[in-house]
Amino acid sequence: MVEKWELQERADEANPKRHRLLLKAHRQDVLALIREFANLCGRPVSTKTPEGYNWSIDVRSLSASNKAALSAFLDSLAAAAPAPEPDIPAESASLSEPASVPALEPAPAAPPSIEVAASHIESEPPAPLPVPEPAPEPASQEPVLSAAPELAQAPAESAGPPTEEKVEAAVDFERNFDSLLVGPYNRFAHAAATSVVDSPASLYNPLFLFGPPGVGKTHFLHAIAAGLSQSLGPDGIILTTGFKLSYILDPMRGGGLPYSRETLEGRARALIIDDFHLMQITDSNKSELARLFAAALKKKCQIAATSLYPPKALAVLEQALGLSFAKGWAVDLKVPAAAVQSDIFKSFLQRRGLDVGAETAAKIAELCKGDYAEAFRSLERLAAFKTVRAKFSAGGSEAEVAAMLFDAAKTPVPDAMKLDSARSFSPPPAGPDAPGLALFFPQGREGAGAWCLARFYQAAGHYGFSTAYRHVLSRAYDASQGTPFEMGRACLQEAAKAAIVVGPSEDSPLFTRAAEFRHAVLHVLRAAGVRAAWIAHDEIAGSAPFLNAHLDLSLENHD
Image 1 (cartoon, rainbow, N blue to C red):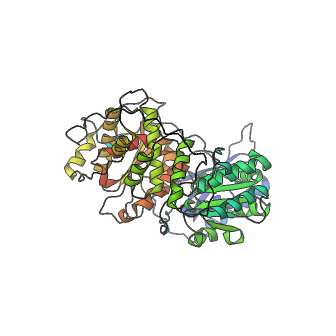
Image 2: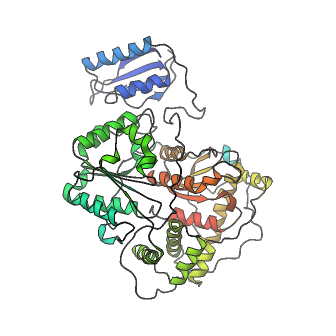
Image 3: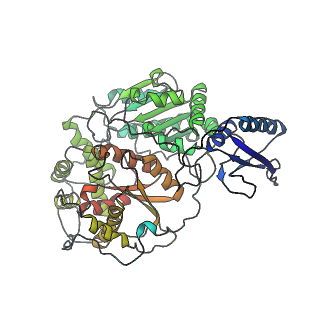
């Protein structure tokens, strides 16, 4: 209930009707107020005043009629029976965290595959990739530590308040229909997508594309966005992700002002959403999202979305948003046949300016054990390694480099004493303009988190990578169910631009679903504009994961 409230005038030259609303109220009542008066209220801020108020809200352009309605609503909440105060984590001082995080849904049965990429194929044999000879690995795998305060207790450098985020992503015009390889695995999706471009908001609205990682879902959305921008104009194309849209329209999020749903409704002529299954629905953003989709369909706005899962697995999301993909068209993208995958590999490499031979491609496929989405990432790492180490002239065949990047040798995880010794590691200092780095590790595995950070910097010195990162966040995650949404929100709130994520340990319930969890985490962080490196817990004693982490943080966010 609302125990008491007060409206104070805060008029200024720009807004003569501005007020501040002070409340002593429970969290759920503040949520109800924001939902009812979203067009008037700013973001609630936790406060503590001598009068006993615990929430402060800016109220803009308060007319006499709006003031009467607001007063009546607050009085009704004040008259309501008291409700129990929900538990809020002690580390949270605002309403930015949702009351709960949805559990990950079951993974699809189909194996991951590779993305449908550019159609041009290099016909001449590629030149050898110039790489340095790796320096001999130190005899001890333990990180070099310095006497410093424990990492978990060290204060992060302040990056200042995060800048206001944008909901839109830039359209990659190289991901177009001309650069798609079309075959039985994606022919129906290609036909539906081109039809959407030729005649938007008609037969295929909404258009829903689903399938395992790497089959080209993101490529299709960029191709649709590029095509529609020609006929509808670029300003009317809203290309975003499920996580970013649900975050940006949450009036309870921390940092910046809520993004205006009304602005989106007015602009959008096409709403294109990647990773729809990663949309996080909370009490505070549910109505905003539902209103956005209802308005988009009413005004004949084209909606297109992708997902790892089929529509029937997203029934809860559909119900919450008042959206039915059955009224449009859902298409399943298949994994290409093995004979096609080689051509797609070569096209993918051509688009990224890297030429490798058949020997290297075969070696990578072998090392990735059929995980073709990871094979693409492996090839990107090769390209990154070439770029980063171009100043060196040492030799080394492509196959040797691939083996170094993906050393399959398993080394036992260090014991607890060795891991805990890494807590004294102190990262090197960095300037205020260095990108912010976040570290996530399983609860109860703080030593593993510190160990991985120390090995990360050891690898930087060994291979000659830049170590210019400001450490803005170090946080444990719930290893029983996973918290990818919280990771994304934390990075946005702390302005982190890079992240290292240590995977769940072998004894945690999430370990058997580590691949699914990894996919969700990396896609949420990518949607938040964060370059991320995943280090499997059972591989933290090796060398390759830390070299790969540097390469992953140097890569652009491709999928």
